[in-house]
Length: 131
Image (cartoon, rainbow, N blue to C red):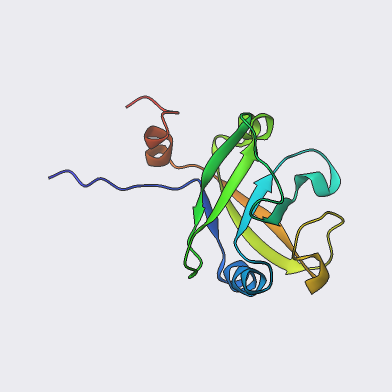
């Protein structure tokens, strides 16, 4: 008997999910974009849906289920995805202020990315390792 497991490239911690529920109550539906670069350019940015427009060079990483009516979509720039395509990303939150336009800024918290290497099973599912 073969069991098929579905893997995701992105997850969220309980603390970040809680903050996302609060922010959604204030701002409406949200989305994340991870660009890359230095300083705050490497932090995941959270925007109200429609305030940041993704383009054809953005990769849809997945959706975060945080106990809301709709999941929160997560995108990454194609260039950054090339660096991180072998990693699983987890969105977390820590005390501090970012310097960007991310909606959590006024809360005294900031979203961060935690990463780990994909497992062999995940690599196979994403077509990054031969079967």
